[in-house]
Length: 311
Image 1 (tube, rainbow, N blue to C red):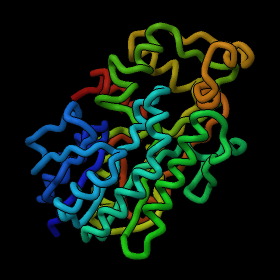
Image 2 (image 1 turned 30 degrees about the vertical axis):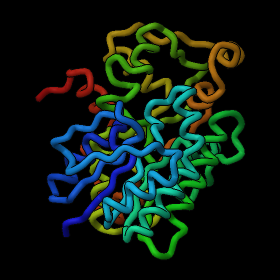
Image 3 (image 1 turned 90 degrees about the horizontal axis):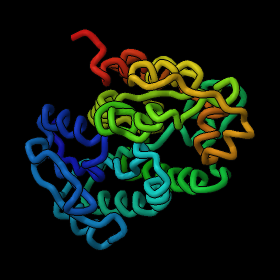
């Protein structure tokens, strides 16, 4: 079935591979971007519309004119990860609600939005499923982000007149992300600025941007509802993935800091990710939708990203 799809945040890292897949399936694609500097490959879309994300009237007008069957919201750019971008993400809850309202008023009956497995409340040593609570009482900017994500998720899932789904991605890697050559993590690692903290037991689930896009297309086409973790098959402790990443990136082995020194030198979110963050399981999306990641392990995905994987 051919759909008219509006993709908000189409210039984000998942946008490129998503737009390509939507066009391959014959869908009519409208890219909704926040400003003229947000690049979208014109060969992958039918039209590009510019509307500031905090301009509710402009958003309503743009979405109405696009007359979508479905809305995809990628505008929470969690893949960037820096403080300024995270502060922008903390405003996304209300903007997502405005987008969903505009889309349903224009006739859309499907909405899919991205969220993050990093938003789960840390809990022991468990790998978490979709029933785990979000860390809405976290402090600082990350608490603001998680509360905003919670509002956005409810805006998508709480409407009886729309088939709403939320995809919680792991740490996104691949082209354009902070893990890619030249990205923020790459530069930190090569400059010995991202350490191991004590035993490095913080767990991370990774998601390649291609796998993120493919899962989104499958959820959209199957018109499923609910929340799904979209992550690879191999959660990894920081003590495992960070040294491996450093070797592939051609950087020095990471130094090790005590927890006290890490708290003095690093921001609180980074310390959390390195020491107590929990990973997520992809069991639900595998069983219910038959989705399988093209990159089932971050090991092969990182190697491909650095040109080390045989072709």
